[in-house]
Image (cartoon, rainbow, N blue to C red):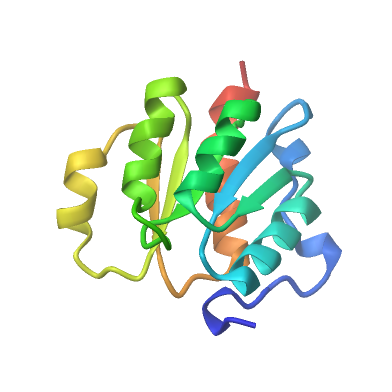
Length: 149
């Protein structure tokens, strides 16, 4: 298991749930990370928070999933295997779904250099290492405005 994504939920009662932020519709998130352990741990945490999750390793796989159906948010590592990175993926996804919330994960330390060209109200960044609780909480916060409509 990748230490940067160790599950930090003590028990099910500590897991934030989607229904705590508004009406419960089936929420779907596309998770993109090249590390299989990361995908498994984060997927498990999101599902425990009642968020349906499709997890893939590359930007190309993510593009295929985006063409098959709609997602309520994209969670992507910036460094992905293959030719396209998470920033490229999000730019392409936003051409198809302009208001798609994007949560970037990265071990980069110079956020100003990364964030400046892609900042908007539905984009957030979390720096690795980060626990699953922080990922779930950030994602729920991002989804909350849509749930309050």
